[in-house]
Length: 171
Figure 1: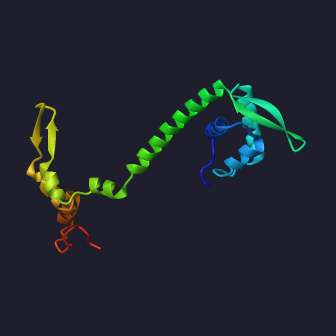
Figure 2: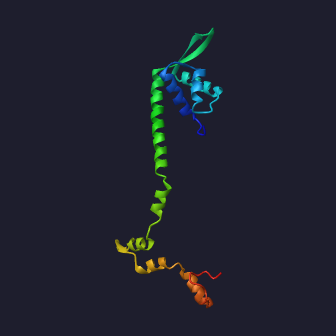
Figure 3: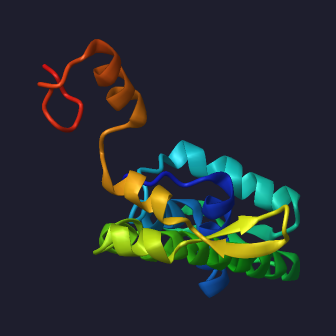
């Protein structure tokens, strides 16, 4: 998996598994490997921390002549699981909102108008001195239509370059 498990998410998953049924370490690690590249040595400190925080209790049970440590969720553990689960849902919701609202086609539609000249004519500017809105004057619209800047026009007039192509590009 390319998305790593952070400690809180790992804790949530462990608590969720133990909440379903009492489980032993190797069993939990095998289930965790379905969603991560978790090493067994990473899991046991999480289980130890959950026990120290009274989220799980540990008991031994014989299996094929050996003792297995089983983990059982406590009431505190159930509350912690509910809290982490709610946090996770809010996190996923925020991520999904970003993903769903990042449609490049929609973003482009919002940035590019089909008729920029008409949009410019419809703009309204604010005149703070009068405290009222005034339509944009037609000279500023015409300047937007003409790609030649006034600096280029003045430079051509000063240098007497009447043969320069329109648009100000004299290369």
